[in-house]
Structures are given as C-alpha cells and as structure tokens.
Amino acid sequence: MGTKRNYQKELEQRIEGRTGKERLLLHSCCGPCSSYCLEYLSAYFDITVFYYNPNITERGEYEHRVKEQQKLLRLMGEELGVSFGFAEGNYEPERFLERAKGLETCPEGGERCEKCFELRLEETARHAKEHDFRLFTTTLTISPLKNAELLNTLGCGIAEGFGLEYLTSDFKKRNGYKRSIELSKKYGLYRQDYCGCAFSKAERERQKKETEDETVFGSVE
Image (cartoon, rainbow, N blue to C red; front, side):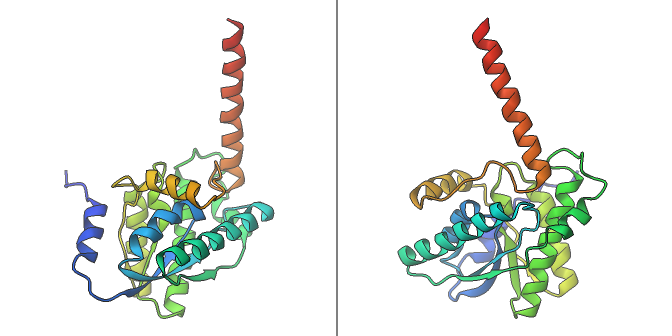
C-alpha cells in the first residue's frame, strides 16, 4: 500500500518562503467555512472568492448564504487590511439536479456528493481559466465530513484538463475547523446545519426527528 498523502504538509511546503502574493481563485461553499481559509491564505495569496454552489436548491437559502459570504469578506478584509475579490457564479440548481439524477438516495458523502464536488470544481476551473488565474482551490476540505483525498484528486485532475494548477489542501488540519467556528462567532455569521441540497436537508431533518424522539422516549423511562 502507498503512503497516504498529507495534503496539509503539501500546502505548507507550497507556500513556505514565498515573497510575493500569487493570485488565487478560492471556491467557497459558504462564509463560515471560508473564514479560516481566508485568514490563513491571505498572508500568501491575493485571493478572489468564487461563490458557485448550485447544490443549494432553495433560492432564499442561497441568497442568504451569498450575503453572509460578502459580509465576511468586508469585515475580515477591513480587519486584516486586505482587499478580497468576489465573483458569483450563476445560480443554476438544475445543473446540480441533473448530475444527481439517479443518485437521490445515496448517503451523504457518497457518489452524489462526488458528482456535486466535481461540478463545482469544474466551474471554478472554468472561471479561473477565463479570468487569467493560474491557481485555484476550494474551502470544502475544511469540513470533517468531506473527503479531502477525493476533493484533492478531483481538483488536480480538473486542473490538468484546464491547464491550471490546483492548490492541494486539508484545511481541517491544524484546528482549522475549530478556528472556523470561532471566526463565525466573531463575525456573527449564519452557520447552516446542512450542505444546501434538498437531499442533505431531508437527511438532517430525519436526524433531528430521531434525536427528538429519543429524547421524548428517554424522558418517559
């Protein structure tokens, strides 16, 4: 068996000793997850956040998350003395639903999620290519529920197809996820409890109901 790659170490080696700030297109899934990534990477890169998340299948939820992302960029930018760029992709949930077709009952983290990651990374690479970014990455690896190896494999493969470079990462390492929670509280960000798609929302509601039922039944005993 091969040695498991340490994507956080790869990232540290990539940025070690940098003297100039290279342009980076950072795909963001949401404000809270991007908070630590922005704090960490802003010392090394000139960052533009690309918000493309067609998996969010309720427009109101989508627009709320966009505003929270923009709020974070403004507040954190002012505090750090950094000017973050922002680009919003098209809101096109039909593309996500087409990719998810036939995979509706897959568990979270399964093949449906892989198709979703692939769609978002492809669109990020396309935007990077069209706007002269050589380097791109995503905030998705900060989640303890997301497979960093899968995301990095997809990212590198997509980057190669577009003639770009993908910045490998595992942002959850070095307490990155914990720090994102702290920053979310600091900036008063809305933290959702599901990824955004109708399928994850239904799964989350089912889990909540099971927890509530256990509480009720437990109190009777």
